[in-house]
Image 1 (cartoon, rainbow, N blue to C red):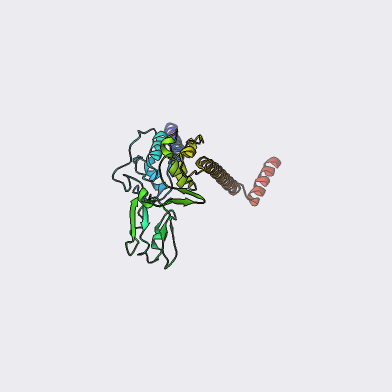
Image 2: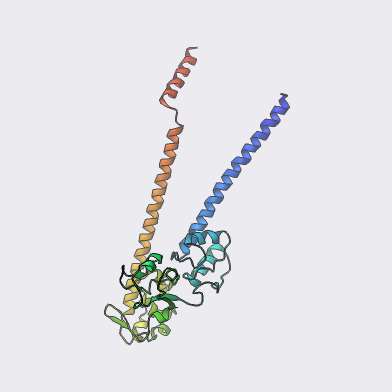
Length: 300
């Protein structure tokens, strides 16, 4: 083969290898960036796994959003989640898609307990464990935990579950008793709040971290304005302060768990690299042969 032809063939082969290497590196970087974006989107979503967005869970919806799906398809997350997603992805803020379930207002499931046969099918279907009960016993829904996903409706064999507005699930004629405090739902605390929060709902859901996050309890400045107008003399500020402390502790534990997970992944990656290095290391017989060859060359 002429030298010029051989040189040209080698040059083409080298260019092909270089292009393949660059494509491989680009693919790995693209996949890594795509995965990090999906993780960031997934962290913003409420993790109710309710499938109201049209996807089987929050992670698949996060992947779809990263691929271009609309950011306004999460009823449980509401406007707060849409704003966070818009800020993360550089998209415009949009109102919640009106075609989605519960897009016009918060709704929760209510079981007509007299008709419940205790089959437990709704308990198995609930993605957030908001239904309590046991086999052949009456079931009930924890309104504070229900996301209104409607996944409990299809499996109910006696159709004893209704979806009602959140306000209807807590009749104003009956006080909400939590410990020694009775809220009569007078609503005086709401206009008194200088930060335009919802003290009444903060009180109801003070033991639900996810609800407190969505209600933005961190904006509470503990000014005691709500305490002064409460006719039941509920120590709202003290309760909110305690709830904020628990929420901070929960965040700290989440960060700690994330850090531990990262350490585990780093450890596993290091072990994998070590195993690969050991696999590529010459065997004992190969090392003996190599040493013998070197000694032979020296003797010659």
